[in-house]
Length: 369
Image 1 (tube, rainbow, N blue to C red):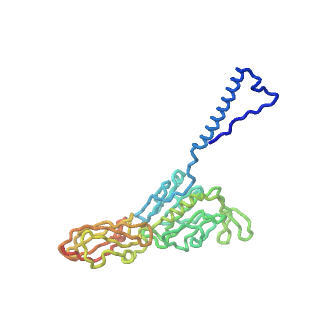
Image 2: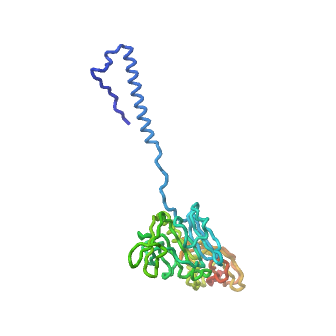
Image 3: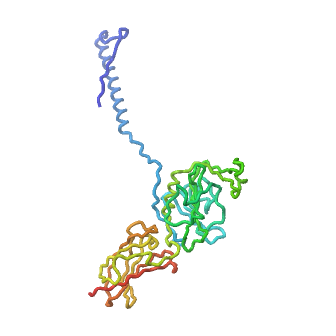
């Protein structure tokens, strides 16, 4: 960095260096030099501070993708949660089913659990009620879930006649009412998921269908055509988080059980193939077949029906989906005297219920030793 030299200007009314004595000139020039050095040092330090001052690296508000997996074997569901959210499972008074609440830490919502469809507008939460809840939805404008422009992408089919989007006056959704079309066995037909997005400055009023005038909510008659209007400022960051969580929601059981041959396909070994140890195993299975990304494979002696070996097949990709997911496994074994055997691919059954058990078999032939 370069600096311009300091120049002093004088006029006839000022004392000039030439009019000073030798000792006065020494003092004068000492003062000028000292002042110049002071300016240089001050300027240099100022520039150095501006160069070394750390930039503001505080992160901007951003949506963290859900990463902590929550699995509930009793109700055959799985999902992912951000680290800042928790799960609260509580029984509903006078009911046999639980309320499963997903809430953000430190918001005060935990003191209000169990939450269902009516809660303070300043809370973001998701209420999972497998047994349903006999109450009307909050006052709001509605739209069919299937027709909404803004909505989460779900991994399961919904009941289009029941599922709705609740939106504000500006059209932005503030809540979702989601009824699965084919829920697992322990869910009732009235089971649902309700997700609410935090809304500030929330107000609700009614528009009379005949006069078009604004009136009190208590006088609103929805069946007559009166319209509820809800206004407020939606928390956009938490809206994105709610979408992420709902998008990760997955039914482990997947409703009505399908034949095993429609759920899993084996690529190696082929039926009646000769096998030897170590045996590479691969294929594809629908997400319902896995739990925590694995399931068990067993090898039996077909003559004695005794277990020869077993291994765990692991998903090669995200298993929380209704689609086929590749898997692979390696099995080491000591071949029995008998030649015929079978590989059994057991569907993961975290609930332990016999009605959820399912398997698929492939006949194999042990190679001669």
